[in-house]
Length: 362
Image (cartoon, rainbow, N blue to C red; front, top):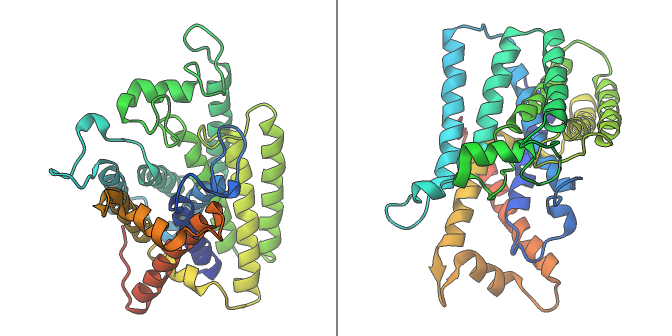
C-alpha cells in the first residue's frame, strides 16, 4: 500500500477547486481583483494556483516513484501519462461543437495548462529517478539563474532584451516564432515554450518538500515553514532584478509561489498529519481525481459557452443572467456565486466518485 500523507491530498484537491473557481466566474466583466490574474508584473492569489499544482506534482512524484527503478517499464509509464495529459490539453484547445467538432488547424492553441502539466511531470519524474537531492538542487539553481540570464542579458533583434510584454522579450519572441497563430495571445502564451523551463523548477521545489515529508525528520512542519519563508525572501529580493511575473514564469515567481506553497502545506500538514484534526476531507476526495475533475470542468465550461439557447445567448450566460444576476447583488458577488456553485458541483461529484471507489488515473 502506498504511503499517504493526508495534507498532500488535501492540498492537491484544494488547488483543483481553486483552479475551477478562477476559471468559471459568472461573467468576466465582474470579477473581484483577487480572482483575476495580474496584468503583467506582480501577482494575485489567482496567480498562485497553477504553480501550486505544479509544486504538488513534484511532491507527489516522491511518493509515487521513491521505490521505483529507472528502467524501461517505469519510463514507459511516465511517457504514457505525459502523452495522455498533452493529448487531453490539445483536445480541449481543438474541440468545437460544430461539425467536424474540431477547429481549423490554424486556430488550435498548442500550449495549455494540461500540456504544461504533462511536460513538467515528464522531466521532473525523470530527473527524480536519476538524480540525488544535491544534483536536483544544482539543476534547479541552473534553471532559475540560466533563465534569468537568457531573458535579461542575451541581446534579441539587435537590442537589449526586456521583461516587458514586447517583441524583444525572449519568451514572447520564441512563442510567436514557434507557435505563430497557435498561441493564446497574438504576442505570447502564458503556458509558452521558454517559460515551461522554469515551471519544471516549480515541480523540483515540490520534490524537495516531498523528500522532507517522507524523511524521518522531526518537526517537519517547522522545516517547511523555514523553507517557505526563505524562498519568499529570496524571491522578493530577486524581484528587484527579475520581476515576479506569471506569464513569463520568472525565477522570482517560482520562488515566491513555492514559498507560499510550503507555508500553506506546512499548516495543513500540522493540523492533519501532526495533530490529527479531521477537516478538508472533501478536498482529499477531489485530489483523488484531480486531473479528471479539472478536465471535465474545462470541457463542460466550453460546452456551456458554446451551446446557444433562447435568444441566441450561451447556456452559461443564460444561467448567470436568469439565476444569479440580481439587482440587490453586485456584479462581482453574483459572478462569484456562480463560480462557487460550479465548484460545489464538482466537489459533490468528487465525493460521489470517491465513495463509489471510482478513481480515473490519467
